[in-house]
Image (cartoon, rainbow, N blue to C red; front, side, top):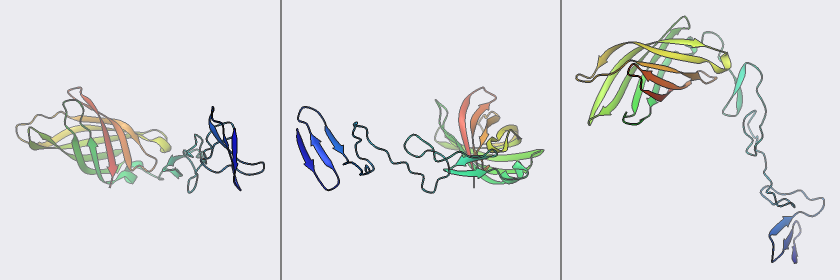
Length: 201
């Protein structure tokens, strides 16, 4: 066995075993060093964080009731009518699944929780040409403010590229705490399903 000593560390080398980096008595182990028992030391990182993962399997804190962790910061849901908070322009995507191409959405949400509405222009490529569909939705919101659920039900299609058949869509999913991002599942009247993500602009 060979022992190499520096001002801060002892390096113990055993030709038949492993190399261990050991701190002398009273010295703190540095981030990323090896514990005397051979376990690597992880330094938690909670800088500018009030919640979420600390990078070492622990958390930087928990959020109080009525708020949720959003980008490592405890955030409260907007007060008042959720549909009013959602009012504005939105974009989205239904990723390609199986034989279905990716579909892109651009539109608006408006109204109040009692009468929430949305309209989206849906576009995708089919046979090398661009297809456009305009769908009109009623939006139903429910659940706690920190994790609000929403269902978009297409009530009518006002335009579809000539020669193309398109089924009405229904989205079911949840909103983030800020009511600016929606993740859910699409079910159309042909019973095909795919994920959908909408983001407020």
